[in-house]
Length: 316
Image (tube, rainbow, N blue to C red; front, side, top):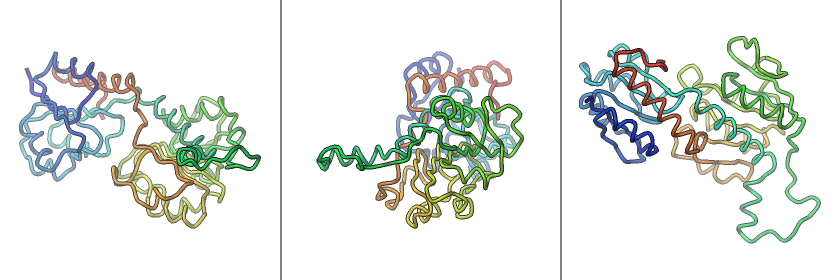
C-alpha cells in the first residue's frame, strides 16, 4: 500500500476513501507546509494531496533531486502554488479538481456583488453595534444591481457561471474579456477589450492564478474603472496588486470592492479592514460540505488512477 500525505484535514468521506486505498498520513493543521515539510513530503511519501498555499516551487524540487513522490494530487482547481513544469521535470505528475468548484465559486461572486453594492456588511455592523435607530428613506443607499452591466475578466467555466447568474437572475448586461476567443458564452454577452470590460458597473475577476495573471489587476487596469464601479475578486489573491487596489479605494477612484482572496493570505491589510465600502470574507468560495467532498473525491480518483498505472483524469 503506497504512502499518501494529506496536508490539511479534508471531509470524513474523503479521508475514508483515501484510507481504503492508501497508507494515509493526515497532517491535521491549518497552516501551509513549511520548507522542511515540503522537502519531507517529496522524500517520505509516494503521493501527496496538497492544497492552497503548499508551495511546491522549483526550489523545493531542486532541493530533492531524487524524490520518492510521483504525484501531487492538488485539492482545488487552482494550482499556482505548484510549479507544474518543475514537477513534471522531476518526474512528478500534478492533478487538480476542476468542475466541482464552478457553481459554488460563482455563488460567492454573486454574494460579494450584492453585499458590496447594497452595503450589507456595513449595515450588519451598524445593527450589531446598536447604532440602528430606525428605517429612513435615505438610509444606507447603495447600487441597484438589476439591469447594470457586469464586466467579467476571464470567461472560463466559473466566469460563464457568474455571467449566467448575473444575466438570467438580475437582468444584467454581460461583457467580458478573455485572452482567447469565446465562441459560445452561453447567454447574450459581448467579448470586448479588457479596458472596456473594466469600465462596467461591476467588475468580477475569474481568471486562473499563475505567472501569466500575476498582478493582472494593477494601477493601470484599475484606472479603467469608473468611480461608481465595484470590483470583485474570487480568483486568486495575487492576480490583484493589493497596494494598487487600496490606493484606488482610498482615493475614491472606485466605489467599493468585494474580496474572497488576498495577495498574501491569510494576511489581510489593515487598510482594507478599515474601509466600510469593502466586503471581506475568508476564502469561502467552495466552502460547502458537498462541494469540498466532491473536490476531495476527484483528488482521490486522480490518485487511484495513478496507483493503477492509468493517466489521472485531471492532469495539468
